[in-house]
Amino acid sequence: PAKRPALIGRLLANHIQPVAAGVSTSIESADDPDAVCPSLTRPGVPDAFAQLLGDLARHCQSNCGILLPQASSNNSVASDESDQQLLMRGWPDSLAALHVGLDVVRAWPECVRLQAIALRHGRALVESFMRHGLPLLGRQFRCRSEPAVRLLKQIQLSTRQLQAVANTCKDRNDGPTSALVPPLRRTLETFIYRVRALVARHDCAAAFEPGQLKLKNIQGEEMDEIRRPEDYDVSSTSDEDEAVASRLLLVMLSNQSTRLIADLKRGLSTGLPAFEEDRVRHLLAEIDALFQQNREAIGEALADSNNAALTAQEKELRAGRSHNSIQLRQAVMERNKRCLLAYLYHRLVQLRRMRWELGPILPANVQLNARDEEINWFSGYNRMLAHYMQTTGFDLTVNRQPPKSLFVEVRCLQDYGQLETEDGCLVNLKKGSHHYLLHSDTELLVRQGVLEHVGSNH
Image (cartoon, rainbow, N blue to C red):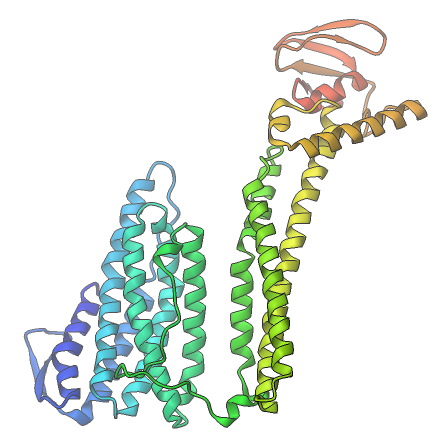
């Protein structure tokens, strides 16, 4: 099975493509390379082409989708090597075979059936790559980014050819074949956004910079913008396409804010994580840039509405697109703002929880990770709580849970020194020593990790 993509590529290049171009040849058997089948005729090319591309798509779904389990610290190197072997063994040959198959379509541009087959099976192969190849690429980026970037550039050539086939079918507008274009374009848009998110996550965005590509057909000729009267009808545009692209763009733009909240959630389980100042400033700059883009878009929309050279349908179409982009950017700004407020709020909640559990003095590591503004807020909250307890005469930080008994047995976990109890006695707390003390005298030290209870009467 590992050699099947290479064999399919040879069959397409050496036999299918010459026959599609009008050159007679014979074809090898897929099961026995030494056997020779009867001469392939041009009318039989679409059937053979469909069989080979379908076999290639099924091979990618079944043999190139094996993902290894996440490696542990002991076998991470071996797993990375196995990942690279699997990546370099299956996908490059499969993508090369797809590229040759699209060359067959280019060799016979008049055959509409070949184009439909390429759109259908090409979409299936790209979806299989997104489902199985991209997760493997994500693991490869962490150790070896060069092979992953090469593989992305290889599939980029095939996606451009698929886009050219789609442009040709859309321009011809023959009905059944044109119906395959919107699903393919949705798949290609999803692929582009997922790849951009992948390379951005691994700091390789410079290796994948999509630009403004020219509209070309399968023969490489530049085309004018494909626009028909129904394209001006907003109701006939694909709402699903815009919704998918909007959701993907929203996820991509909100990636930094999502990671900010996720990192905070992981860090709060062990204390107070360091303040992500660079990421916060990045989000603030992104909000400001999106706001400026919205302001410019609103100005352009107002100018289009007053432009007498545009027809009513063109004004309606441009207004709809401008409204959608403005709403999307506004949603990203609102999401970033909510994530920033949640980030700041939950850090203060953690400091407030530490005041009740650890007392009025923060640990040294917490003070190191907190900002000056947060330390000032903690000091103000501490003064306010102390003033309230002094006014009421109750220590609210003691006996927050009703104790089972007034006295508890505790074990000292570290050298602490002398502890003055409520009745004025001094107790020397040394590591490993046992004491029988009032529950109120030990509660704060238990929360700080100095003491631990012995038995269940606490």
